[in-house]
Image (cartoon, rainbow, N blue to C red):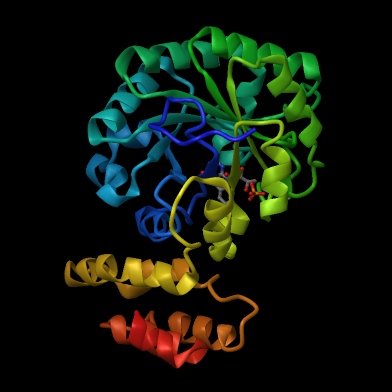
Length: 337
Ligand SMILES: Cc1cc2nc3c(=O)[nH]c(=O)nc-3n(C[C@H](O)[C@H](O)[C@H](O)COP(=O)(O)O)c2cc1C
C-alpha cells in the first residue's frame, strides 16, 4: 500500500521514521539526519516529564526549525505531570508528543514507567487522555509486544484498544517483548525474538489506527515488505549507524522528485548548521560524532572515523577537521562540502 506524506496526524505521514535513541538522536543528530529527506519523521531522545518540569526546559526542548516534522518523546507515568510536559513540548513547537512505553532500563523501571506500563493500560489511557487535553498535536505511543509473561496477543490488543479509546490513533510497535529484570537494555534489543507477524495481526485487528513497525529493519526490501502490512517503518540503530540508508529509503518510500541524498550531500547540507553552532561555542565533536557511521565499507572510512574522533575532540577543533576527514574518503568531497 502506498501512502503520500502529509502533516503529522494525517494518514501516511509516518511512512519513514527515525527512532528515539538516548545519547544518539540529540538535536545535532536530528539536524544531520533531516538532510536525508524532508518527510522523514524524527524523534527526540526520551525526556522525562519530571526533567522538563524541574530541569533546564529550554535546553531540553531546543531544536532547529529544519527538524520538522519532529516528535518529542516523553517518559513518565503521572497523567498530570505528563500533561504539563506535553503542553511545554507543543508550545515549543514539536509536531507530536510520543509516550515511551517500551524502555526496559532499570532506572526507568524503578520510576515505574517505560515498558512496565504495558501492564497498566488504564494508567496509560489516563496519561494519553490528560496529554490530549492539553495539546492539539497528535499524542502517540511507542511500546513493545508485551513485557515478561504479559505478552499474549490478547494482552497487546487489549492494551492498544484501551489506549486507543483514550484517543491515541498511532502506535509504534517495537516488534519484540521486553524482559524486565535480568536483561540490560542492549540485550533487550537483541535477545527477545522479533515477531513482525504479531504487529501485522495488530494492524489487521485495528485498521482504523496507524501502526508503525520497529525493530531490526535495515533495507528497502525490509521496509517495503513491512509496508504491505503497516503504515510506517521506524529505524533506529541502522539509521544512526549507517545513515546513508536513510537516503536510499527516503528515495524508495517517500514521494520526491529529487535523487537519493548521499552521505556527501548530507554533509554539505549539514555544514552551515555546523558552522553556525561552532560560532556559538558548540564543540565540533558534539556534532561530528553523529557522522561516524558515514561511508562505512568505503575505502578511507576507517581514517574518516579516526580523524573525526581524534582530532575532532581537541580544544578549538574547527570545520577543517571535517574537511581533513572527508579528504580521507575522497579528496573531491572535502572541496565539494
Ligand atoms: C542507544 C539507544 C538508545 C535508545 N533510546 C531509546 C529511547 O530514548 N526511547 C525509546 O523509545 N527507545 C529507545 N531505544 C530503542 C529504539 O528506539 C528502537 O526501538 C530499538 O533500537 C529497535 O529498533 P532498531 O532495531 O531499528 O534499532 C534506544 C535504542 C538504542 C540503540
